[in-house]
Length: 595
Image 1 (cartoon, rainbow, N blue to C red):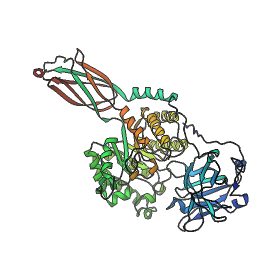
Image 2: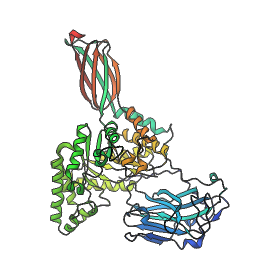
Image 3: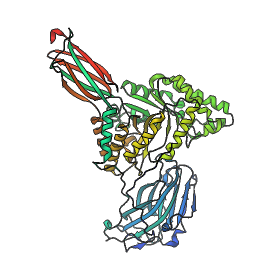
Image 4: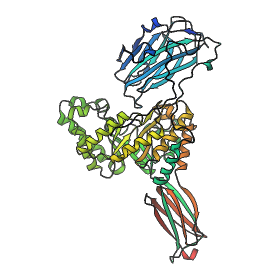
């Protein structure tokens, strides 16, 4: 089985020569002779290479390939730099254009990422373009940026920089051009910064009706309620309330012990953080406390989070038992690389320790995390260590699901295929892998919802439980962010093979990519947060019914846990009930003397 690939952009990819200005006029700040002076600036502790490469696009002129072997301490610690010529005055209209494509990337979005900067090339490196983030997939993408100069730069003092240290990646850059149109130019005449969108965003897109039908079919079931008196006779005209208390579908977020347990005075916003989590989610995972090094350092901290969640009725997702790279493992492991038996024992002892300590308090586990790029343990011990690890996990955690978690999106179908192949191979060799965790860290490349469903259709027959485990959407366009969250989550919720959707944080005050948060640091809600709330309301059941002459009331309700209550006069009754896909009947008895 192989997966097709579909990515739609609103970016123009025409054949206009890169050397031709997008709008006549202006001054060329980057004549051809300066392109040969491009360099790769690196901090002393960082690595990277810059090379000219033959181009497959003649219209792009000179093409560079930049290799960043590992994520830098700061994005600017590895940057492509080229000098610019000419005087820039404050308020001048500038236009920067280049083309980029990802050759490889370890960023969890799967894209090459960078930040465009224009600055004075000497301390304190004052900037006239402060920072424009961009990303690129496997096809050439045009990046355009019109702006007004924030500060003046004297002739010969400026550089155009692409900061690339944010991920281990290999990226190609071509078609680089910079023009200054002066202070009086109408900036609206220039091509805008790339407008990102996706197929199926339209309110009347055809996929929406099909998704709604699937939701009705797979996420709801019939619920019949019978109200009788003490003698077993039906009670007509009783008021019945159907209140969902917990969805069967898991809506989750990553949480962090810092804001979870810090006092408000020490970490402003934490009171609201603690309050919001159980209101918005029915599942949590920990950003780092269950990861091997953190666990060994302070297991009590992780167990405290588990208990906090359980006290509030939240499911807990374990992340992770092994992230099989030396850099994500305890510091003593590399020394065991040449002693596979000792290394194997160290790994399995850790699994035994963490699974025993958490007991039945953790529901599902990412047993292995991101093995595509992190495989030091397998290189040292062989893949058999993975099979043994899953077997041990199932022995100690028989009632929960065991996942293989990988940093993929539905726009990286090649990587999904390799993840599937790996999971199927390990399963054939005896690893009891129950599910696939698809992380889905998104940036500029947004998979159309219809394509998401199509790929889920291909994955479902393999028999793996499917969860989106680390979703975020790193965009500054808040309207687009809200629309895509709504549509992506709708596509997932509509598919019966998907059991959970988990965000990698929701509050800007504690988010690894603050632009992706649904609530700002001051707790004002962003459009994406409102879209999420709207979906939670749409996909839950809270109804008031009345029994007929036969003492019965019926509805179709979303699957999950319920509190069913009935009353007539002074008589009342209440019961908890779990509605599964097969539907169900609840019978409540009202006292005959109170009827």
